[in-house]
Amino acid sequence: MVEVVAIFSNVSVLIVVMKTPPLHTLTLLFVLNLCTTDLLHSLFVTPFFLASSGQGAWTYGTVACDVTGFLDSLFTYSSIATICVISVERYYSIVRPMVHAAHMTLVTALSVIAFIWIQAVCLAVAPLVGWNRYVFDPQQLQCTYDWMARGSGKSYVIVISCWYFYIPACVVLVMYSCIYSAAMKASRQVLPQPSPLMPEGQPTSSPVLNGNTKDPIDLANGQKIFVITTADAEAGPSTSDDGGRHKSATNKQDQTQKTHTQVSESLKATKTLMLVVGVFLLTWGPYFTVSTIVAILGVSSQLKLAIGPLKCLAHISFAINAFVYGWLNRQVRLELMRTLRHSYRSICHQEAEGSDIELRAIEEDSKGLPPVENFYQFLERTATPDCRAASRNPKEVKSERENKTL
Image (cartoon, rainbow, N blue to C red; front, side):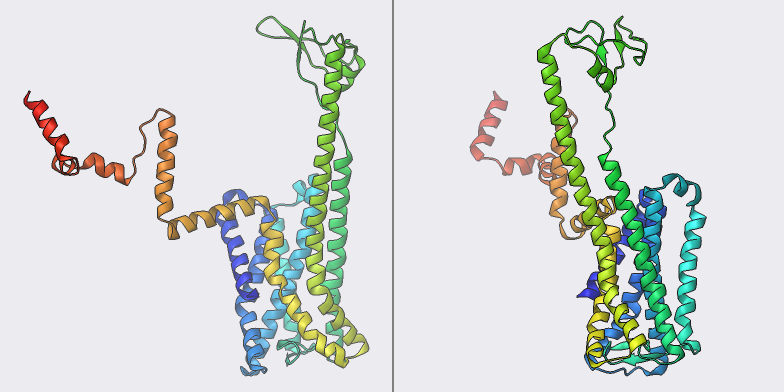
């Protein structure tokens, strides 16, 4: 089930982003790389894991074990590194937009993606050239690097755990914490709102013009208006108490509504950031933590039993990442729903076409345009006179003939 969800979610995001020009942004370029990595893992690594789970052993030989172990490490390292890069890119785009605009170009983004893959290849090849090794682990039910190795192989486990979990986890936490702090700071800032343009001679108010008030603007109809900020409006006395009370009540209502909106947006931002950070920490954290403990302190029977379920939990991230980094994007989500709805109608619902035609006919008729006729209207209009007469009452046909004779 997780395999199907992983393939569907990643393929859907890839198709929607690639076929929609407005979504061709640098941020979504990293999301495309993430979805590509997760999709490749789901296609070339997970099937061997499922087969080994059913058989309880590895039956494909040493070469196949090395290949699948290499691919598992390659796609895992690339996926985690991309998640880390996305957090940094979002920090600069939100908190430091000027720096982001000056330095984040297409060449820079492609260079970062190339670096992600190069360093992933280098560390994934290491067990093939003597630094650790790829073996079939009966607890994880797949070929992976020897996480119980001693000597030089032990250092590989520690380096991988630090480079691909502890450092990325710190980066992700710091970046999204800064984003959250900036978002909360921005939500607490209440900027003065300009008041409506007040025509000269309007009886409801008569603002006192001070040094901050701009010169009156002459309109084409001979009237003059003054652009008065909120501070100026509050400084000037009102000639109508009722109007002042009404304006005060309106301002309080607007301020209350704005406060509720800010709280709602803050809660939404908090939930989103907690989801992004939580998915990464909860899926990969337990596995790399146990691997580090085993590499430093040694293996125990409890850890052996735990490593298998923890690796399965880590595999879930390949299915969830597309939802977290793709579907949470409003534009991606709307375009995806539009694509799915269009495909559903075109493939499974031919009747929906007739409904759309009738709806368009009603809309065009309401605009005074010739209505778009449906299939039955077309048959009625194009039927021969004999066919129409045959479908009518014989008495009506006889009466019509008598009238023509007269």
